[in-house]
Structure formats: C-alpha cells, structure tokens
Image 1 (cartoon, rainbow, N blue to C red):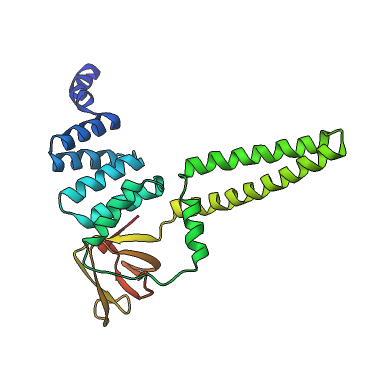
Image 2: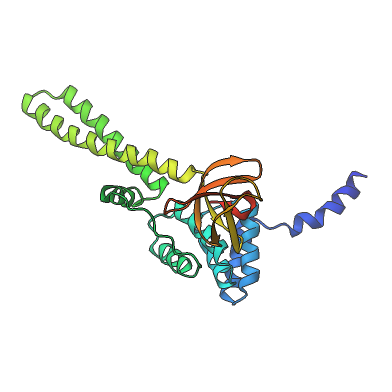
Length: 248
C-alpha cells in the first residue's frame, strides 16, 4: 500500500520545478516573445514565496508588456525596495507612471529630505548593512588604538580620525534603520482596480470624495471592516474598499 502511494505521488514530484528552474523557464519564454507565459512562470515563483529584486523587475516588465500597467507598477515598486539604485528599474517605473490616468503632484518637501532619500537609496539594504558594519569595526579598532597608543601625538591623531569615523558610522546607522523601515513598511498600496470612487466615510452610501484610477500609489492610514482610509501624495484623504488595491 505504501508502495502504491509512492508510485501515485512520484509523477507530481517529477513534475515539480524549483524556483530557479521556473525563473530560467520564464527568462527563456520572455526572450522567445511568449510574454504571457513568462509572466505566469514568474508569478508562480513569487506565489511560492521566493522573491528577489531581479525577479520582481522581470515580472513587472512582463505585466507591462501584457498591458496591465497597475500590476507592473506594483512589481516595480516592490523591486525598488530591493534594488534602490537600479537606474533601469527606476526608468521603467517612470514610464509606467506616465501611462496611468491620474497625475498627482506630491506636496513639496524640504530639499534636505530629498538628499537624505538619495543617500539611503544609494545602496541596497544588504549593502548598507555591510557598509555600516564596516564603519562600526573601524570605530572599534580606532578606540582600541587610542587606548593602546604609547605616545600622546599618536593617541590624539587616531582619536580625531576615530571621531570622524564614528560620525560616519552614526550616519550610516541612521540610514540603515530608516531603510529597514522603508523596506518593511506595509502602509503603501497600488490601486489595481480600473476606477475607484473614494468615499468620505467607510460606507457605500457615503458621499463621494474623489475618483482615482489604476496604478496610483496611496498610503493607508486607517482601517475599518472591509474599508481602508487612504491618503494621496497631494494630501487628499478618503475611504475605499480594501480590495481595490494591493500592499506594496
């Protein structure tokens, strides 16, 4: 009986494909111009729980090529959290955003925050972790040299260098924690429905606040039952059904 069960289960084991095999299959299909089939292969890998920046980027390209711009934007935004310095990814995201209906101008920010975002997005989270740890080691080494230095001149020189290294370490440490917050935040979503009528309260009979379309990025600031309260980049606030979008 056990043997019979194994024989029945064997075909499914042989048919199962690893994530790497599915990604390779998707890449091959994409190169052959079979975009929908490639998209399905990539999506199957993502649904299995395997995620990488490159995979999400490829999936976004496949959604873009098959005409689903909102889902392409969703994949690009997810990939951007893992590949913040990828210029091709940013370019494709900009192109996709040009194809959606709404043009929402964000509220102005202080220029210092723009520079801070550029600094923390210079590296991926993994790269930022390595660099931050490297500066931490440098600071510890500097402190050790200061404590063990035999001359006052050497101690003073190394102390100044260590102070500078400590400042840089703290800068990278702050950007690291900020980056962790960006990567793990679950309050941003992309609208996937073609048209969404946003209400003034979480009630389908409530008055309309405004209308948005697929591809718009929103911030979720509150929840009630099957409704979410959203804020747009320009500051507009309203309620919509939670199923109209998907968390980045």
